[in-house]
Length: 321
Image (cartoon, rainbow, N blue to C red; front, side, top):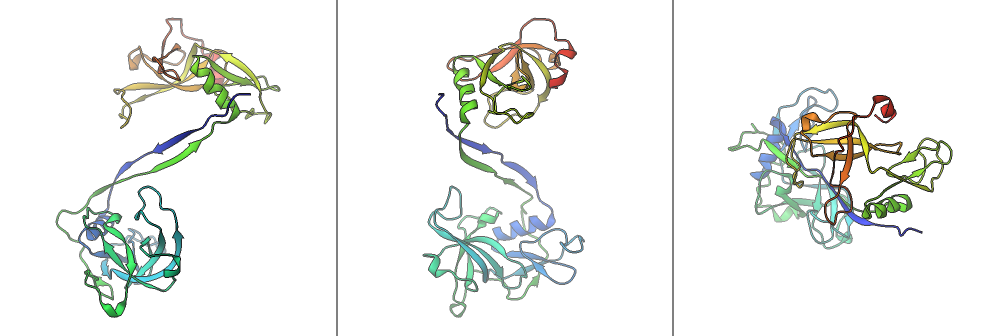
């Protein structure tokens, strides 16, 4: 029985987006400790602001300033904060309807425990010491006693017209997206990964349709039958289709342009992914015969290179394109 493998896996995709006039004004306003909403056609004030009326779909541009204090409309306690969350100690996620707004803003509330949080409680913004024009310019919310007053530039209790004009406005942001989890490949893929350590590629054959799947999935996706018979394939294969990559990945030390291809290994009925090297990118073609190149100590092929064989006939791989 092959040992089941597991490993931490991080999927990360930060991307840069530009801002329109409404979102630019909102984020720049946070940098300046000013909370801006937008007024809809029926007079409703939305915070955070949106660029189009959710009811009529009309474009919205009338910006208004609202208070930096408000009321909790609902909440949930977070006993175990995760990486990059607003606070490092237990806190409450809250929806806060700021004074002057008709909708609620989601953020963190710094409270000593869940018993200190309730719907209807009054809270105010705690501004971040360093502000750059992002939602994190609001460090969190904190409980607020109306009678004590608020010296943190609370803004008007009723929405006040605002032109949205600031010096050096924020025009774009980087939106991070990251998922950390532990991946367990299962019996079939664990056997596949173990074989790769020995520079071998194994798949599994379906007992009904006799197709060999690489990487193996533990079951035939066509017949729905469990697979167990291991079959060694390759090492050579055929490029079935490919793309030319022209954008350099942040953490990948490969110069662009380069080619990433679907490769049908000899004996396999499913193409796998691999990088093509050892040939100019503009000479890669469908039908090109390739073989794996292993870096020293690597657990999988670094890339595939041409074998020098004649190109494969299209009819031999057309079902795998």
